[in-house]
Image 1 (cartoon, rainbow, N blue to C red):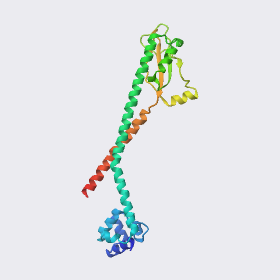
Image 2 (cartoon, rainbow, N blue to C red):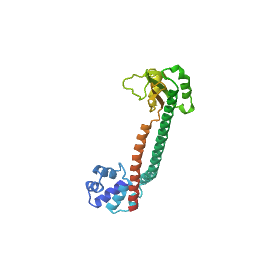
Image 3 (cartoon, helix red, strand yellow):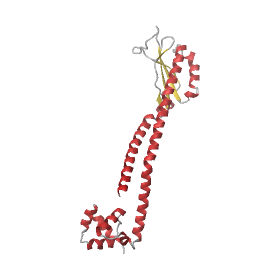
Image 4 (tube, helix red, strand yellow):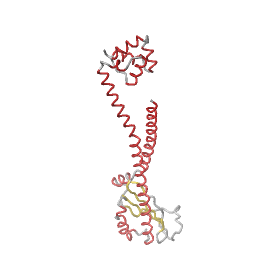
Length: 256
């Protein structure tokens, strides 16, 4: 005998309506009807609840209904797989979170170190030359950019405010900077694409040997630090939530 017919007979024996059973199990009346006519099968938790409600053993309820047994077996396997996934999910998320933090630290250290190195190189160059005379230091600047530590530098621009009487205070408000050197034309297609995928280095204004104000703008490989910070935040929250869910599930299983 199919389980649907057994459920109907057991309900009628208890003198309960489909509406009564639906309210007790907290499901819709149509769900009870579907179970009884065989359009669908109840899940494992509902089977146990029905067994208790009708005071009929699970063995008697499930006997002779191979389709129902197969369904419950499949449900059980799915539940076990979900349970295992929930056990490992906090660990997986935590590893991704740690990798994100590690990446951010490495990227920030690289960025800060490169910024400081480039500032020091431009400062050393400025102390040797009048930076308005590009031809005098161009080869030296090119050789600096060819160093291995500066391979991630995609482009550099040198701006100079020409100070006829010299300057000791880096007063830039009333002086216009002139672009005297650039490795890539920012208006070209190549330049726009390159700058779009780069990040500007934090640069400092420097005085050259004649008191001219020098400003350099360098662009390096974009490590997407801000994006990774967002990823770390998301996975940090997900890790906390998944850990909380895992603890709640284990606590409920222990109480049973």
